[in-house]
Length: 137
Length: 333
Image (cartoon, rainbow over all chains, first blue to last red; front, side, top):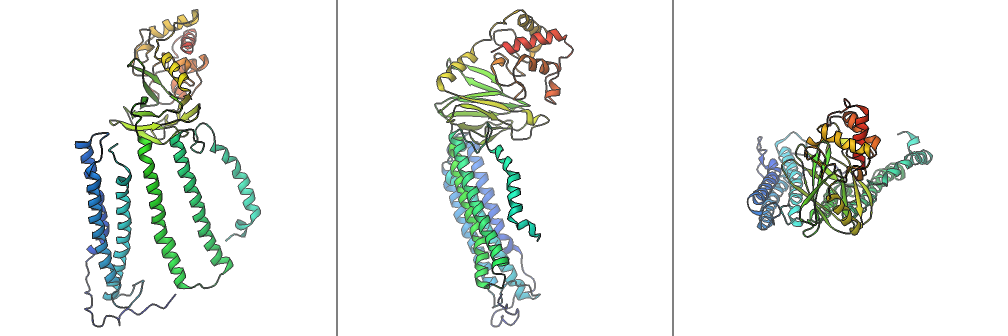
């Protein structure tokens, strides 16, 4: 393994992260995934119960879920990008385990990227059924 | 690590001991021996998955052997990092994605209804199956615990349950679909081989869950039509004195409150229709053969054979009467 860079002397010229950081960005990827699942599920369920019927076509629901998916994936991409910027703060490399505000900042960024990646793949998997299944059956 | 684990001789013995297990791969209830279009698709998916699983296992074990035995010294960290990122992060979602897409692409055809073909309704009840066929005359005929299908035709099933969740599964012919109270689920099957197969309940439904099986007979279309016509006809009259007394005893002891025998005054709907029970391949949902002796056992002590069954024991009847009822029922072909 390469020797990892030190934690502190890298923050010159940039504002040092505060001692308290929000955990919301970390949770944002999975929250978007949850939102996508609930929206897709509820839309398809309401359509099939009220409009399509037992054997009806999913019709416009497939397009709507496609739009949800595009929007949510863009949202998750933004979360990942912002996570990457935090992760790349300064010159230190993983695992970002020094007890300093800068390393905590990088750690939260890296964890956000990983959770965002997981959420991205999971959202694609949730959307996949409407690619193949065209009816409420 | 224990060195014997890697000795080829010990592996040889293990393989030899495991060999008899392969016997379970064939038979009337095996997904690995498909006899229907849908089962063939499922078997193909299984073989592709198994092939890739073995390939991935081989690569992982190969890497482990390489770094521990063949080249047990430090490795380039960049290569190692890319290997971990590639094999641990990128490849698994791709493999799972391909499998998911392939599995989903099978779903529409597995549940596609046979719009103009035969539609059979099956209700899973603790612990048997009520099967309704449409007759050529436009009516329906109710049978139990046996499904017969014409070979080469796509048949639709409407599945439901009045009590708890059961499942309808004929591994040789296709996939498994749950039978859910308050809902109608669908399945369609297209058998490609004539033969007798076995169906099972694959959703735990109570004490006698394991005794809720059924025979599936795939027949030539002509033979199927003849069979259905025969099943739709009323029961034949009892043959001989013993069977005649059996019919009297059947009606006198209230059996007709739960069971129907078309052509007689027995018209109960709680239990299985017995109009042609003697022609079935099994009694008590795949538990007993349909000979007179098994009918006697069943009438006397149904709870011994199928714990929790709704049918009460009739062992208070005199033995000759039980014998005559059993003779009568076994004649109902």
